[in-house]
Length: 168
Image (cartoon, rainbow, N blue to C red):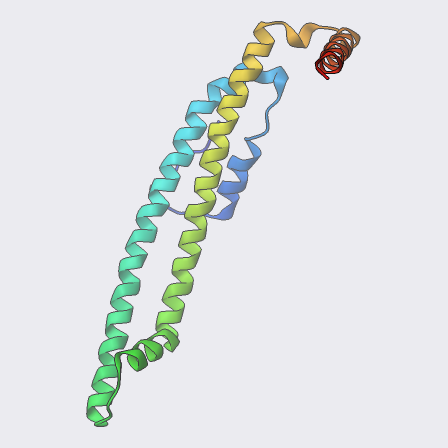
């Protein structure tokens, strides 16, 4: 089963890799995969929501850092009695090491949220695949002999080609 999300919110790439490994579908274990599907979806959705909240909090922290740097630049220009434009202040702010560091950290949060979003979509697709595989299983598709399946495919192909020839 899937590990619980820790209350401390500690997370690393190993968790994503663990969830990605669970995407693989084994047609011989449909019952186990179906039991796991909802729980897996819930865990990834919850984790994505958690990281979205963290990212949003970090966005606010970036704004605070930018505001402090902006104030320092304006104060420094006022003390030096230099005239500055908004464009100059914005350029200096973008080059500030604290702003760069905060934005780099924000990029990591954005990447994690994006990766979890992709994983959530993949789990949704896995659910659709499980539904189709279950329908095939119930129709006894997997119990047929391979030669029987090949013969049915050949027959369908031949009839399809014959139909196309007639339409020409």
